[in-house]
Image (cartoon, rainbow, N blue to C red; front, side, top):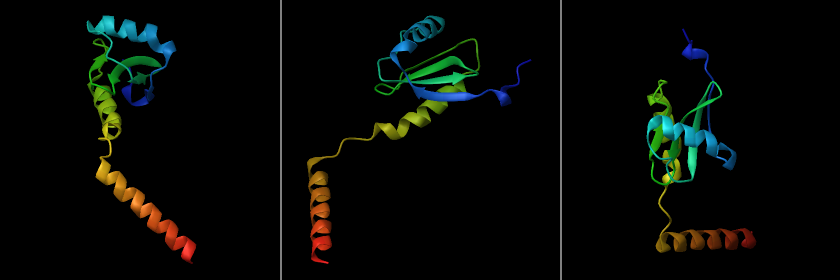
Length: 107
């Protein structure tokens, strides 16, 4: 029996060297590898799940308990999906920075 409490989990971005392992994971899951950029989850040094930061599509090892790894990938990816700043917000930020600079010079 495997003790899951001692398994090390590593989450990191995909690198070009991960392509063979991603292809194999996609074949195991019977799904294509999601589009880049990808976030990977390793458990015990083995690639177990991958999630696209662009589409949030995921693939996972069907022969291992990976639901919690996919949840972790989703939680880690969530803050990275911020919407871009709109033009009025950029103007406010620039105006605030300019005002702060003027205040600093005036002191």
